Length: 140
Image 1 (cartoon, rainbow, N blue to C red):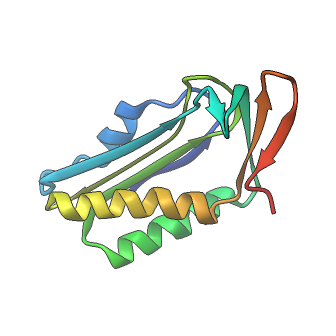
Image 2: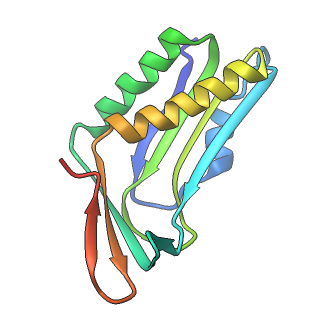
């Protein structure tokens, strides 16, 4: 069975329960998830909304990230879904989950999955502040 169970980029609300269900495994004693949501401020400025834009190759990059985590760590299941499009304050922007035989391995895998996703997957964020100014984050 493939340990990479769910990878996607979606322009609709994300379901944390779906991502957790994807990594369910009878051999897993630890299941760890992380969900990132849109906060109302950044750098001391009030944020009104965000927009995420993905490069056409972003899903392939996400797969490479997940494959590297699966190759390096003894995981039972991995899943990651990132939102695209316009998001409001409080919306879930990204969800990752990992299952493993033990909690330490699951924590390590989930942390690595989100950290490597943020570092290597070409998804860019446009922040719109309350004063109408905008900035792009994570663009090349």
